[in-house]
Length: 238
Image 1 (tube, rainbow, N blue to C red):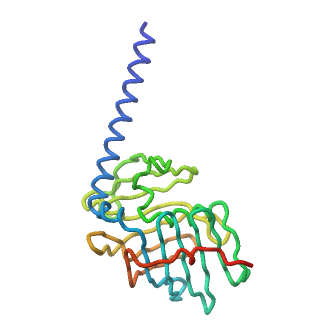
Image 2: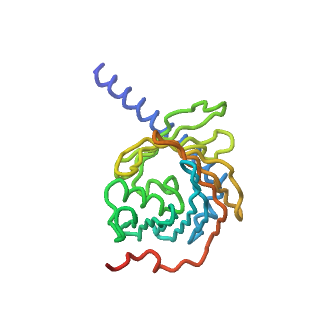
């Protein structure tokens, strides 16, 4: 009998902690969605940006276009050569001229990264319907600012940690593993210089920190609901 009561007490304690944790996650995300204008972002069908990437002393022009549901195209000029990466909603491909002039299929972690980029709403929004899990790790002081640390495990098993400002409820940084040049590396992306676009707050500067060096992406133009033809996501025929 004592064993049964103890087991029941442990079960009730664990259930209570899980319930409180779920409530905390929901409250944090609700405040985050309110802060960025997620209700308006959810109605946006396309998203286009022109940006400049600064890396290793070079400035690289970049254009990125996204269209619901789950289409993504990125072009970057690199020393006179254009790299193109695309996800069409089902498959991904990349053209890297220094490797081949023919489009190469994206697989594994690189495909997952392209799929994540294609989600205009972000993986936190409707995360349960997308098959992701979110848990509150705790509250941390980062550079003098209190941050909520949310651990996101997506449906494929990859993990990211989102750090959300406990006062402003904007994403301050994301820590994850990514594949670069065929190698898995730890990446910290810092989101700064948030600006308002028709009631939607977007970080217009992203600082990526990796063991191989840092890079900055500065958005020069942001256009919501731009006209984007589906043909730009089609893989070129060989």
